Structure formats: C-alpha cells, structure tokens
Amino acid sequence: MHDFQYANGALHCESVPLEKIAQEVGTPFYCYSQNTLVRHFKVYEEAFKDVNHLICYAVKANSNLAIINELVKAGAGCDIVSGGELFRALKAGCDPKKIVYAGVGKTEEEIEYALKSGILMFNAESSQELFAIDAVAARLGLKAGVALRVNPDVDPKTHPYISTGLKKNKFGISIDGALEEYRLAAQMKNIQLIGVHQHIGSQITQVSPFVDAVERLLAFVEKLKGININIKYIDIGGGLGITYKDESPPLPAELAKEIVPQLKKSGCTIVMEPGRNIVGNAGVLVSRVLYTKKNEGKTFFVVDAGMNDLVRPAMYQAHQGIQPVDHAVADRPKLEADVVGPICESGDFLAKDRILPEFKKGELLAVMSAGAYGFSMASNYNSRRRVAEVLVKGSAYHVVRARETWEDLIRGEKTIG
Image (cartoon, rainbow, N blue to C red; front, side, top):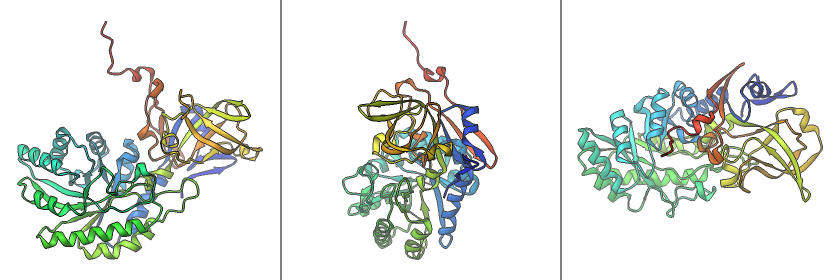
C-alpha cells in the first residue's frame, strides 16, 4: 500500500497535489510519503514482535537524511555499507549501537571511523578483512563486535545483478568453510564474535529462499555452539521484494510466520535489513514531457528526467509504472510508446514499448515505485544537476534536498592555468 492516489482528478501524495509541488519546486523531483514510509516500517515491527529483533534500515536504498531520520524516530537502526552511509546514519540521529556495517571492501579508514563511533557490529566478509578489523581495533585499544557473513548458496530467484547468496557471488564466506573462519576470528584478541550474517539478494518475491537460507544458517549456529562460540545476533539480511508491475511478493507477516518459530528457538536477537520493501513504494519521480516525436512510426515521449536520475530501467531492464499526474490524461486513446530522457545514450529510457495514454508537451507524469535505488543511484552524467527531493507529511511538503545548482556541478574542481 502507498499514499499516492487520485483526488479531484489529480495525483496526490498524501494530501498534497503533485502538480502543486511541480509548480513550486520545478521538475524533475522525487517525492516521498512519510506516512507510507513509517507504516511499512511498523509492519515489520508488528510481524516480528514475538522474537527479540532489531530492524536496521538498508541505507543504500535511499540515503536522504530525512528518510533515515523518520525511520530512526520510528525505532529503526541502520544497515550501512560505507563510511559515507555511517556519516549519514549518525547525522540522522541513529544510535550507533543500532548500526551494522556490511560490504566486501571496507577500508581501514572506514573501519576506524566505525569503531570510534561505537557501532554494534561489522558483518565481515573475508579472512583478510578480519585481520584488518583486528589490527585497527588493536591500534585503538578497542574490541570490535563482529559477525561473519555466511554465504548459504541459496538461489533467491531474482535478477542476477542483485543475487548475493550463491557460490559464484562475491559476497560472504562459503558456509562450508565458515567454521574455520570463526575459529580464526576467535583467536584474534581484538575481535568479539557476537553474530552471524547472511543476505541472499534483493527484490525476492517468494518465501521459500528465505526459509531455506534460515534453516542452513540455524544449522550453522548449532555447529558454532559445538566449538564453544555462542553468538548473540542472527542477521538474516533483507531482500523482500515489492510490486513494480505484476509481482505478488509476500508480506513481512507471511515471512515471519514461516521463520520466526525457528529463529525464536535460537535465543538470539534477530537483525533484519529491509530497504526497498520499506521505501520503494513510498516514492515517485515526477517528470514533465518536453516533446513528443515519432520516428518510423515509433512514438517517443521525451521527458526532463533521464537515466542519470533513475537508472534501474537501463541497468536492470526494470519495469517502473507510469501514471499521468492529471487523471484526465488516462482517458485518452492508448498507444505504444517509449518514455525517454535527454541523456545521449540509447539506453536512456524510463519505459520502453509501453501502452500509455497520449501525453502532450508540458504534461506531468509520475514514475511509480521509485523510492528505492532512485536518487541513491543518481549521477551527474552529461553534467546534469541532480534533482530535488521532497518529503510529504499530511497536507504539507518539505524540500529535503535542494535541486543542485550549476556551481554544485563543479564544486571541488579547478583548472591548472
């Protein structure tokens, strides 16, 4: 469910017409619903209430400070994958003891920053990373809370670029060799083994891969007990999908029903890392039609947002719903068309071969389900300014990131004369 609905013939975010924001802020812009965001988080809290748990929002999905802050106020922790995301999480008010740090390529500088900040734990992904964490912690005179990311070799049945739990993926440590890695870590003086971690992928639309992965993880936890390693946290990752087109992903409650009874027996606190499932359908990208054109019978709607603003269609061939901001447009005759941007790439499209109403120059359209991996993956390609971000709460909207200026494009650069 989301809070983008038509009222009086116009698409609204909560109680604010998107047309009003477009007139006052300009286009393109991202628009997020605070109510949708917080409701999706609370659905997780309710689903997993019967087991000790910590829900760490995956900052990579959308790292805007206002988004993180709204979730932190609702009780969330943060799942981070870089020093920059740590900086954002802390600036947004997240308790460092609710921060878990994943990622295969942590630098010593980032490890030091996280240790000094007092995060809950690192999700370590290799033996060399363990040595690096131990060395930095020793230099600082600190103990590092660590979970090892175990790769359960489960097929999440999702896009190969966002599958992370198979043997062929770069992430984690093979579950077959993970016991030896735990033995190695247990000998390190400045590492405290407090958890085990897995994350099998993103945009997963079935419960069965989660069930399989959790079963393998719990069997591994029993093996750890056999060598006197008793952990406190089981991090089951995130990855539950959302509806972009015709997917029917399970609800958090359906997932919880299948895995909570087993997880509860472990006696551990369960950590989860949802991102897309919380913020994906809480946001849209609003764009204006610049031109319409036909080439050899092919219809194009050229809009002012491009692949630099939303790269998912180009990168993943992802489907993003397109809706007119003015509902009257929806009543026009339909035709097959591409919605394309101003970038000098043939891959610059937001929708391809889509049956759409006949938009006209100057009209607004909303690219739906754009709250996750939209702005967070945006770039300045073609020296385009990154767009404004707006958060709506009830009948008021707030610009939570200003549109970049021309000067922003060259900040930090200089000529050499």
